[in-house]
Image (cartoon, helix red, strand yellow):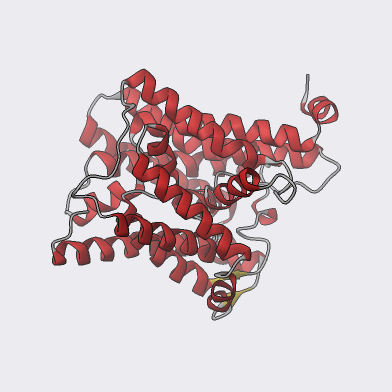
Length: 354
């Protein structure tokens, strides 16, 4: 059965949800088994060592870039139609939101995707932080935090289209994008095998994390090209998807329409849970005396507000938007790393456990 038949039989929304579930399950399983974590990668850099976690993150990022740019080069993905390039963006939102998100993920000991992965492994601290994150995202989209978010976004807006496309601005085009992606992948392989030597299974897992983002882009683009309705092309993003799941759980009558994000979060959770059970990593963990509840909750709020202000999280803006060379997405990714590094140094100087 081809894609057109699937859309006709099951409907666009259901096929999109199944696509989100497929991509989310692959990401969740691979991220759990490789311990994929942007926060841990930042901490290793702050400590002056490009160790295990940094090499896994960079290899996944390199694979993401290669996979997405290959789709663009073959004409199977049109980045100009995505929300990271097409509509009006915000430089101030990308920078300030990224800084806030980076600071928050240090406090919560994980970014949005990592909290979801850990929650499926029995970590109740991550589950609570994830719930607060989702509530804050919704409040920032259409609640009492929305006016502050809109005001900060309006400080430095940027037109959509070529103004947000780094490859267009630089004149590199699709071939230049592929060249940069291959370079990033080569660096990722160098860092990885310098650290892990012959751990091919771990390398394949990290590559699977990155390629799952490319898979999301490719499948949603294919559905958009076959559908008679307007379909948003997208990769992975855990901020808006978390808020959507929350709204769906609270009230089915006011929840968003069924789509890609509806399948993403539950399937990512299921993939991580399977990985934890297979690897013997599942264990219930609560707050201990050395855990600071206030740090977790404050960090979750900073991440939630920062993610909406910046247009995504480390995976959503940093990797998904970064893989199509969106200017604001790259600014967000850089700001997240800077914010996390600054937060880490402040915590260390104050003697706080992080």
